[in-house]
Image 1 (cartoon, rainbow over the protein chains, first blue to last red):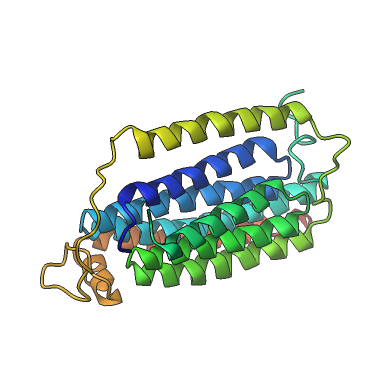
Image 2: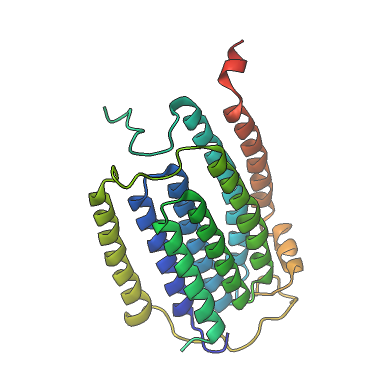
Length: 102
Length: 178
């Protein structure tokens, strides 16, 4: 902790967010796309904790607590939706789920 | 230069995130995701947010990723076929990655927008002022039941709604119609 500054942590958070975003664009498998979305959410929580620590306030850390709670609920609902989709269409590839395009 | 532990865990996190994006097998992607989440939890520890680091490992790397792995193994058709993959999407993704990564590097390293001060002191475990950064889990509880009581109640209600929603979504529609 001696020599790390705020910009190091923000750089790590930003790179994680960019990797997650490019994963959402590159991948076709809905489950992997969803994991990349979660990675973007985690990157934002890392930035929040870094800001909270370097500004010496507790609010950012509490906000991260709520984000983790909501993300757990969101993952459960999202995965249930993907399973329901798979049951209807027998695929989780976003290439083959183009009913609204045709 | 940042200290060695930060460099180690940052490299681990970035590498695991790259594995998540680039691996063709969904289970390998999930393993990379777990490693990335553990790396982020280690960074929480380096930032003295011990309670959040423990929560990150328990809830994210534990419960959420077990759910992901369970669904990946439940569903077949999780391997991507390279012959039918549209490679221009990969080009778009790579272009977005390089532009945004350059932007992030510029913003956080060279633009001077982020103050470069280091943390001078280790945070106290508990403090009489509930709003300053403290490391004990007790300080979370104190704020959650005073300043953030309404958000806490709402997130509890949200968990209940998600529970009911998941049950009603995953109920078999054929059984429902009979």
